[in-house]
Length: 267
Image 1 (cartoon, one colour):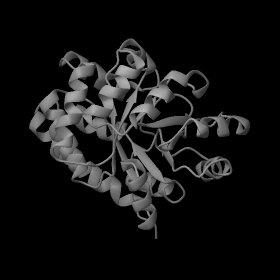
Image 2 (cartoon, helix red, strand yellow):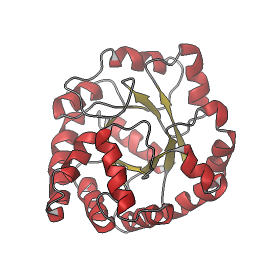
Image 3 (cartoon, one colour):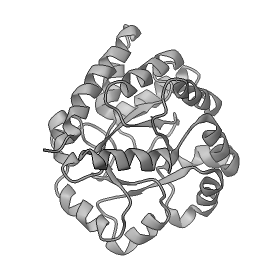
Image 4 (cartoon, helix red, strand yellow):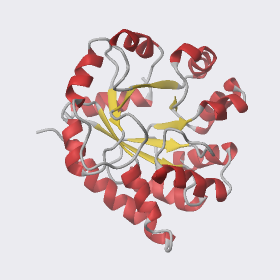
């Protein structure tokens, strides 16, 4: 059983959702990023979603765009992202997925990229801008190297297309609960329970929900029906708010993650 399958089996047995934390790899620098990931994984995070820095992150709002820019300016490359994963594996066996864009995979050679990710210790890859209809080479490489695939379902996805997306997925389905880009919102998107029910008709895979979730109350609201809750911008804001004193970033991430992850428990 893969690490992803194990974590969703465990959280299901504990009657809660998995807490999925997104941070950009190498933001604001390599060593601070390692410390931040350690703090997150010690503070209630079940699954770590590492954003691979990219110069044109089209699915990301300003918070995560600036995080990618800081990481790139600090010298992050594909090789350094792999090194970051290897450092995390020195102290944690929690599932790690890459949140990335297909150009980065394609430019490095699809099979080579997936193989390198697996060797570093990555469990799954979510390529934001890669639809399953165009993902044959990527899916084959992931299956060959034992890396789980994660694909996105949007509020605008027709019911007829959900089985095709599910068939391409081996890890979990990511429901992007809002149209547009990532970012903290005052309220979670409407109709999340209905959307999850609509997806469950077509698959038994775990369903994680992200985009626009940034408070413990919002986590709890989503966790009532989702298998996983993804929080990104609210955590990345902890990095941005402490750039003047980077030693404060890891403690800030730990405190925020502990607060947010308390929301995944169901009554």
